[in-house]
Amino acid sequence: MILKMRAALAVGILTVAGGVRLSAQKTAKPPNVDGRVLRDAGSVANDALPDSWLSYGRNQSETRYSTLNQINDTNAKRLGLVWTYAVGAGGGNQEGTPLVWNDTLYGITTWSVVYALDARTGKELWRWDPEVNQTAVRPKICCGIVNRGVAIYNGLIIAAINDGRLQALDALTGKPVWESRVAYPQDWYTLTMAPRIAGDKVIIGASGGDKWTRGFFAAFDAKTGHSAWKFYTVPGNPELPPENDAMKAALKTWGGDFWTKGGGGAVWDGFAYDPDANLVYVGTGNAEPWHQKFRGAQNVDNLYTCSILAVDLTSGQLKWYFQTTPNDNWDYDSVQQLMLLDLKINGKTRKVITQASKNGFFWVLDRITGEFISGAPYVKTTWALGLDAKGRPIVNPAAYYDTEPIALFPTGGGAHNWSPMSYSPLTGWVYIPVFLQPFTYAATAELKPGTNGYSRGSGDPKLIDSPAIGPPTAEGMRGALQAWDPVNQKLIWRIEGGGGIGGGTVATAGNLVFQVINDGRFRAVTADKGEILYEIKTGRTGMAPPVTYAVDGKQYVAFQGGLGRPATTDGPNDAKVDNPPIMFVFALDGTAELPKPAPPPPPRAPVPEPEH
Image 1 (cartoon, rainbow, N blue to C red):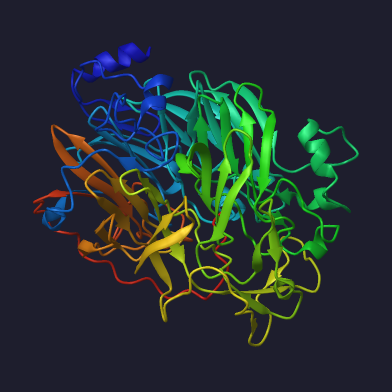
Image 2: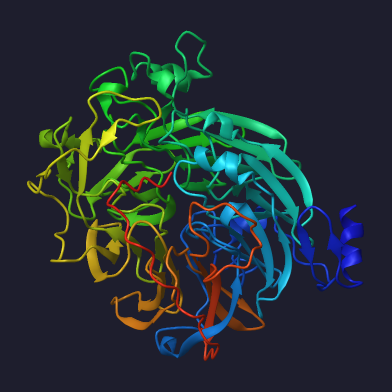
């Protein structure tokens, strides 16, 4: 059936029921993206498709490094817009990383609408709307009607749908091939994470960490959608048999009736895969409710919340874990980007996994064993005094709070949140978008149904400003981009502009870091010195991360920007709206005009930005 659909495309424009719009495209057989191609993506010697962007982090190590160098530190000032595409009606920020394969750009926008564009011109090739029931699902969503990306495998585009479905679409036609159920919004789960391919499986986690949910992630056969295994990140009802030895061990770190409140531990972003070790790595979210007094036991670790987990791809069994914030009281998820690197440490090359966690610490662990190698605060941090020899944070006693508000560094939104960092093998540094501000914490007197026990309190908070560890913050600097040395755990340079939520970075062989900032700025920065060579205001806010790719020998940079209809408004996803979200694509000597700038959004009250 799929072959017939592909052949039909050669005839011309088709109209297909079920929400797909198709345009004619070439019929030459495209290169297949299988496990080997994905495994070698990013390799200088073996990358079969170096001009493409085949997975969320470009490669399965999630480094977001491109070997393209046509745009470089000698000519970046010549960047200009070449085309735009209105991605939809909006209703929320754009957070999706597009993929590029077969000269086609694949994106995902608000309410999980997937689209395919000619990567040279922006011409729409097809568009698929899964038609989520907006009225029913919106109240169930924890933290925004967003999607962070799609996956590609074996001629399929695989998308996580907000309402809990996982769909595979034919990459050439947009027609559905299979659909599976990951979770149900009736249970307060939604899907916002970009699915990832590991071997012949697609891995997906469910968001909902600030609802009364039990965190999990699951594996499905990437060709058929059949369920392979499911791993819960926190234990369930202790009166029932635990699912595995990992849950049996975790039960000892909880107490009271914790399972009636879900427990938390959502998996909504961080992922990496090491095919040599056959290990899938995920980061887990905060404990739920936020304050320990509501979770049924005091001063216990609450495994496996705020942790990095290594799970065997074949069996779905836990191999090791490392908890970055035991007994979390501060919404310090460890779901941030996981990056696999081979680093020379103390004269020996180590296979490591790294993370710039929400809690302000940059972690370097042995990715085979989970051994703690090093950790250091990469921003000003006052909730902890340091780390012990095994990497366990030494909590500042003043960081514990109840109904009287306190303010701590870093923010509850995270020193680094989902905004992607990148790594350059040319410099050996990681480029991290960071928040540098404190955050106010207070607990409610009692846990009311439908809440997480957090309150901003009344009156001015007590500022916990010292003792402080980590690089000091420049006066007035709220967000920044910084280059971090993961071997020596030290700050190399830092420039204003950025933040842990929104936009992100890509490092390239042209000695550049392409950065998108949530206020709408796009810029090219030298990787070695942090010099801004090019910067432009796009006229949008609520920005998604950039990618870079090449077609016919020409290098491009692409990213989405948000706005459109008000965030709380339901409506058709193909409606014509003012100031719609846009896909922007830049190249050298581009001369296209930017869309009319949108008016700035109204200021928001300072509330937590958990982004689950």
